[in-house]
Image (cartoon, one colour):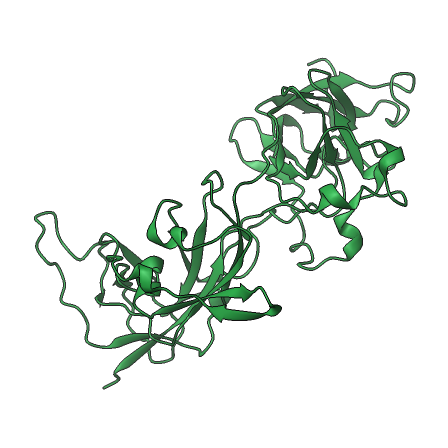
Length: 399
């Protein structure tokens, strides 16, 4: 009889920064997957979160997780944090997590992780020992996952509606399948700079060589207008690597979060910035076409990415519309006859306060000083949906 059951476990941080003001919610992210050859039970595995490594403040206070901070005297050295102040941290409320069985699994195990996020309260005990300006790292202390109660079960809780226990806990100990389990690394900041609200509108427009030389004759086009509703100008990066906090899962950024493609307000003349647009079937709401990113962007970038080129940014002045005409012919070409809608996906942009003129740029790039500031993204998003009809293989311009 086995005395341990191995669960593949990986830990990461939701964002690379912990915002002490609480405006950007922060979590420690766990991915768990049943892939042990000894795990042959076809039922889901129900485990209690409270008191386990998934209960991060409690796990730190009781030695299931470790916390280290960057040594101010040696940037590459990490020193263990005194966690004695956490000795009164109680286990979280009794919540459970269900892990699907590996029996009859058809997808690759790497795609079969159950993700759990432990939110870190900025007013909690753990946040009180995190100091702004310091970098921290959280790791598993050992292979012990600290799970106090678990069972094979289709249920979602260990108690029934009357509060009576619905399962006896299994005696076998749950452990991580590897000696290492990733880590959660993050920097603490007092707060982030938040952009003004940007209002983005879309509508169809007729194009002609006289109205916009970037559009081909008889092309199908959208007019996109963006208005800065704030009181100050902002400079916005429209192409290249976008540096701002992005959400992560256990192993990599969330899909489309790390997207370096041109934003829809880019002023390019050689290619339409349509990466954020989708074609949706009018009747069913199904997305027919979208510009999904192939894979994720590189997770490391050159130093030049800190300072985008001057031509890669635009200025949004308060109350002054920035208007772009976007050729969507390539997006809608070849659609079968029918009625569709064009929809915009939300995309974030790196931005800076004020207007940065070319005379301030260094070697044709943005000045270095503002580029090192951690900001939250300026979001380009619109609730507008543009309807179009395809008739005889062409866009019906009469709509």
